[in-house]
Image (spheres, rainbow, N blue to C red):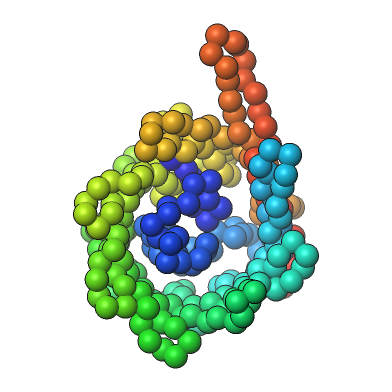
Length: 279
């Protein structure tokens, strides 16, 4: 289980076989599609994020620069490699009146050259996301996600189809609104359950989700990841905020304990930093 799919501990592999990190369509993305969770207060013009991930004695760092219009909607995001080379750019077409992203253009540069794809978002009469159509640089459909929502407008089923219309994966969600959590399950095309997650529904609610406690700003102090094998990893979170109350730093520690020995060990797992420029 995890609480921040945008910065994944475990990547849902069937979706990522055909998608890039941060672009894959899943229940989490649909649930929080048009939320402005990069900030809570003020009007940022730009947010620079630096994310460092630790693996033993090694570490990797990712950097992104996000720019916003005066209505507060994200309009571009540039992603850089550790050496400062631009490797990807996302550009959004927005309906600022309805506060909806209508289209996202994803460009990337790699050793294989330049690539571009576009995602078109379709909403129902209640402004609930019901379909995502991915297109290549020539406008040909490459992938389709169809979404079923419950009476509250939250996604309960997402099915993926390839360019021929053949299904190749499904994710479902069950909601516990009293606990502010959604439990998701990922299935293969033959119906086998591959993995499951627990997600926060409303990040603005400081509530206790089972053993997971949020602080008074609504940020989780603990989280966990459970694999299909039953193995669970527990994480603890520490935060820093600026004078407006926006989060400028987060440290995530992996917590372990040894059988028969009291106490616990914490090892740094991820460090996130944000630098804000306001209008």
